[in-house]
Amino acid sequence: MSSKTQILDFIRGRYPQAEIDESQDIFALGFVNSLFAMELVMFVEKTFGVTIPNEELRIDNFRTADAMSALVSRLSSDLAVA
Image (tube, helix red, strand yellow):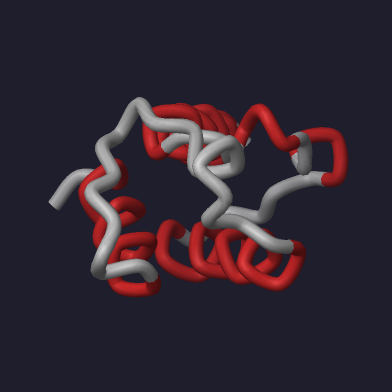
């Protein structure tokens, strides 16, 4: 299962009534409050075994499943190099 699919499944699990795809801005749609934003960060870190550094904790990295998947890919490749 791709990271994008896992992220979408997590979001859809919280908001089953919503039809969200990988390119929709979940902040603009009003699905994200500060608590859910932290839950997203924790979900990404735990699920994909990455640590999100402070400089990557930007809203643009979490607006869409595409953006979160790209973040996971970047952080995972950084782990492979380290």
